[in-house]
Amino acid sequence: MKYPMLSRSLSVLALVLLLVGMQANAAAAKKITFTTKSKEAREAAEQIVRMIETFQFGPPTLALAQKAVAADPDFAFGHYLLATFTPPPPQGNPKPHMEKALELAKKASDGERRYIEAVALVRSQKAAEALPLFKKLSEDYPDERMVQMMLGQVYLNTGDPEAARAAWERAIKLDGTTPRAYSFLGNYHLLKGDYAKAREMYQASWAKRHKGTAPFGPGYGLAYAYIYEGNIPEALKALQTFEREYSQSSAAVEFPAVFVWNSIARLLLENGQPEEAIKAYEKGYATVPGSKMPEDQKIIWLGRLHHGKGRALAKMGKHEEAWKEAEQIKKMIDEGGERGKEFMPSYHYIAGYLKLEGGDNAAALEHLKQADQNDLFHKLLLARAYERTGDAAAAQKLYKEIVDSRQINLERALAYAEARKKLKG
Picture (tube, one colour):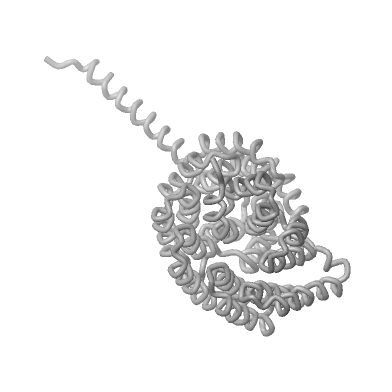
């Protein structure tokens, strides 16, 4: 027996279900639309987003953002990108570009407007206020990868590393061909103390790097993971590999590898090889004089050479020679006038370091109190000084701050093991 009415009903039902499924898939694939009629502006913006995810920053990215805005002066996202890559004062001023982006965003697509407004909160140090906006963006634009990348960073900044990890893993599911998300996951595992997994993520990130680049995140991340395990030879190998790759990259044309050599030097210095540290500091500074670096920056790196040599000489027991380096730094600061005053914490750092090495703990304490308190290695030295002058409570407080910190840098890596060992309870 045939049931024509039932057959037609089933056909209609099938069609309805198909349409519902198509609508659901369309919703799931919803992405942010860039509000511009300029193909050139849109392509430039898309290219910049890709460059960000492949750790390509600096002048070329800024030039591309300028190109996007020139192609469409009313392109809100273009102005946002211009604000992102315009350097802060005195070299530039990103604030007017961000204000323009927010103004134009009022007439942009829903997603573009909301994304720019949420990022503006993050840049105003209002991550807690930005979080619900990004969470809603993630729900409404589940296929938009850059939302997941930013959501992960906001989660991390607001103290939810597990949610951050989940966001970055979703970003990789959307597109796992670029290195940045893997580097962020490496940072997550580093802070969790899973150094083998951190290395796995950093190595995955490094393998996906863009040709001609040497991304800092995975390059240094590998070294950090080894430092936390106390494997200094492998950490040095990681930094030396990064130095070779960086020196051959396009970034080295604008900025030499002096910072990598200084990191190698610090690792040698704090692990019993001060003579080799001096050689590394000198190799690093040798890249500076003939570089394109501004003259005032060259002077700063010369000061860092004196700083490193002074600390290394103190480790070698050559205290008079070391103090001459400190005096040279003080002289450079005084000759710098008003600009030089910002480097006084650096002078107090070396003075405190040298006094600590020389056994004058009270003088070291007074100097280190005036060093940069955001630097976790400076904080470690201050804790040593407190401990040696009998203030165990103050030392314990600083050790705890180091251990509890979520900074991803060489300073924490160098300070962490001692702070954790000394921390009681």
